[in-house]
Length: 127
Image (cartoon, rainbow, N blue to C red; front, side):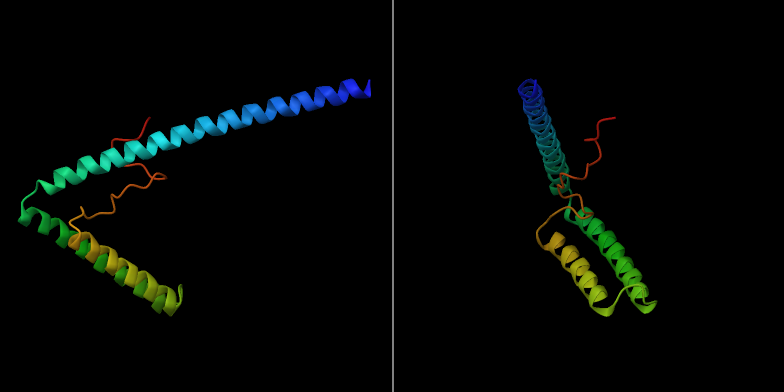
């Protein structure tokens, strides 16, 4: 009887592991599909951005720069109020400035619409 119970438990565990592995593989494929959809949506937006005139692009870069400046003011206020320390504030400010400058120098559409598989871009969400 002990052998039968042991056998049943082993079979149940093996079945459970198989189902879990299959579910994980299926979830991984779904995440990969979302990542591909996100990448395709970004490429589509980037190609539309590339077709804009230089003055239209500059207007977007200027707005993005204004947003970055406002973010920096907010971070500095957090620092002044003691919510974050000086080194954290400096790191965030430097990163914000670098990202804003890199976007324009690389000709990338401003606004943080770069592919991030854990985020969904407009038009890629399934409801």
